[in-house]
Image (cartoon, rainbow, N blue to C red; front, side, top):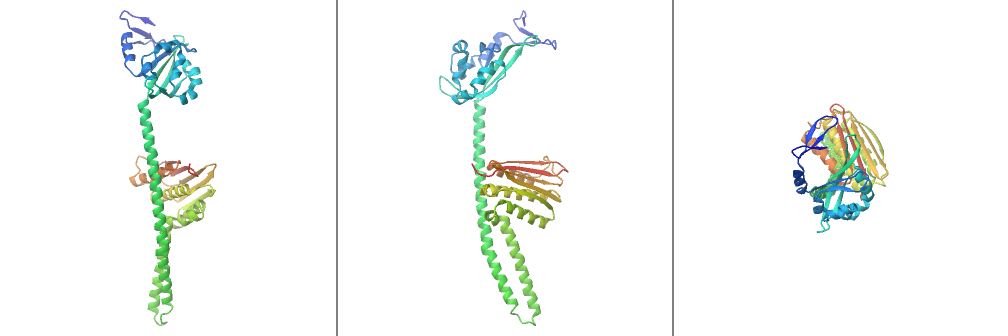
Amino acid sequence: MTVDSNNQRTLQGKESGVFVNLVSEEVLQQIVNNIDVVFWMCTPGTKKLIYVSPAYEKIWGRNLKELYENPCTWLDGLHPEDLSRLKDLFLEKRCSGQFDEEYRVINNKDNTQRWVRDRAYTINDENGAVCRVAGVVEDITKYKLAEQALEESRAQLRELVLRQNWDREMLRTRIAREIHDELGQSLMALNLNMYWLKHRLPEEKEELADKAQEMIDMIVGIVKSVQQISSELRPSMLDDLGLAPTMSWYLKQFQDRSGIHCDVTIRIDDEQVDSDHATAVYRILQEAITNIARHSDADAITVVAETRDDYLNMEIRDNGKGFDKNNINMSESFGLIGMRERACALGGELEIVGKSGKGVRLNLIMPIKGT
């Protein structure tokens, strides 16, 4: 380190041979005096401070002179929770250049709380040995507040999604029950009446008998459609028998309707899975299978679902054309977002991986009970 005639310090890089001109001490002092970042420097392996910038007094609300006399007063301003977490690390690692932590500081003058990020670095001499440890303490309060506000907003969104999903399920259940009880029973009564009427027609009226049978067949078809619609809205077996048999039934029905082979392995303990989480898993399965049928051109699907510890894992794979996430259309995007939001609202995670020509893999990890 040398000082030239213009009172500027010049640092020579030994390896590169390049000289970097640094600003004068006066300009440097003006910089450190007017920014809300604490620069500090100490002797490696000791707590002895060589330099601390004035921003320390603004953030900590404490006198620099006291800090130089007793470097451990850094700790006096730490929030009690952070002090218990960082005290040993602060004393052992910070002055050895192995420190990068976020913590809270309680200002001694106005009792306000600030978040800071404290990072330490080693400075080597021309022989490569550590000669100084320098650090930067940056006030990150506004970023933390923004982060907290964002997390609160996300929590509110999750609550909204939960509420909307619950309302939607209640509506589906009510409509399914009314369709099954009201329309279904009326159709069954109509079918019985037509059957009664057909068998009381004169034998010579074959044309009328054929027409009556045609109407009976139509009613039977409508009854099956009503049952299918009711089951799609809210399968009663989900409440009566549980998630595992409902998933097996749904995939069997899908395979029969679509001709797409389904390889299914389900090891779920239904007694462990609460109603809200069972419903979410079933709806995600429905949406995923519907997307495969509509968009994938697959002829085989593999579904593996099991409960393990306090979580349910479900993997769905197809052998279809896959997708390029940059070219995915809006309807597919909304479906994927809806599945992910439904999982996140209950503390789950949903990973969807697709590659053009390689099919799609969906992996769901879901708690089996609410907290």
